[in-house]
Length: 513
Image 1 (tube, helix red, strand yellow):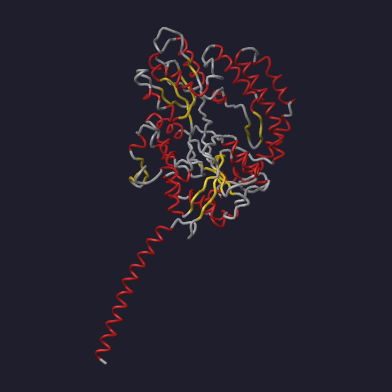
Image 2 (tube, one colour):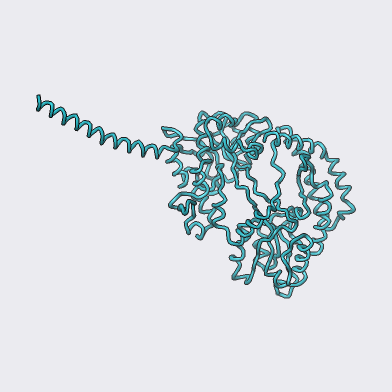
């Protein structure tokens, strides 16, 4: 009996020991599995069909960032668009006409398109889906600025938007080296800005003995940035909740009276309506461009880019001459993603988009892959040197890996700030610290009927407005003599109807908050 008891005791101890080891091993495996599955959308692999056109003949799911996301989420994307397609709008319209939609649809003009087709039944309403399955998306939908932007005219939300940091996008730049040469101060108001442009034109700051300077230029084919100097625009605005069309106001008349004068005095690029996107490269590269309004990040790079060919160039940001900056970066953008109303994987689709909205997903989208594109330094994802100082721009490197995607995500300004030059950083800080930013008129949502009528009216009005203002600038018509007739003509083109549509849409926007 003693031998039997001893034998049983040893056996039991062995079982306990084995069970203990097995238990430890199993607990370790479970912990590892939990780590691996923390972000898993499903226990079993899920495939979501996807419409998203890329311009580089690659499918999103084949890129490194998305392979990593697949490992974490257990979700694989399957693109339905051809690699040979580059026209996103045409591809989107063709898909919508077919009625054969994938689970997920990504589109640049998402606010208008998803709302329109969502109200027609093509895309799923997302409020309840987000409420029950997507805490990160729900948190954004609960923000008044986001909710008002994404809510369609019928009160539902049909797409998940991209979210930007609330920061300034662009600012005013001027040739500091020219100011120094001519003994001029940095302009602090519109009158001083005019005097600086006048001096650039008349006093040969580039020193070549020719009057070839182009004091003001813009690569955006127009004069919209200059309009801001007189606190107006060529589109809609509101004051105390009352919507109005800026071109029929006194400020618009004042602005074009001055702009026509500046153009006549050769202070504005003679090819401002036609030169296009290369004007900045051309005029700065030829050492004739004096000032512009443009993006901080790219414009501040020209000093380094041209230091060999334009010695001493010092193109720097300065405060807006009238103390107001209208290029506030939209916190919510039109680009985003929707879920097909016919999808049988709506929950998986919203959960997947919610992951991209999460802190982990946002790191992938903003910074790429840890250890490959960035390392954590003092708690912040910091790009490796080859990303910010490589042969390609950081944004190109990230996009080629699948980051900075057309998928909706929450952008972290730190990703952009890391490759800004000191001049760009100083400019951004100048504008933010001094609160120069002015809120823009919001992008509104319309019913199909409203949108159709508004497009019909405003296409004719905007064509007339553009043709008339160019006549004013070129001097073939006088602003003072013709402005009242211009306003009368605009109103005769059914502006009152357009104002009513805009006011109703704006009131819904405010109510949605």
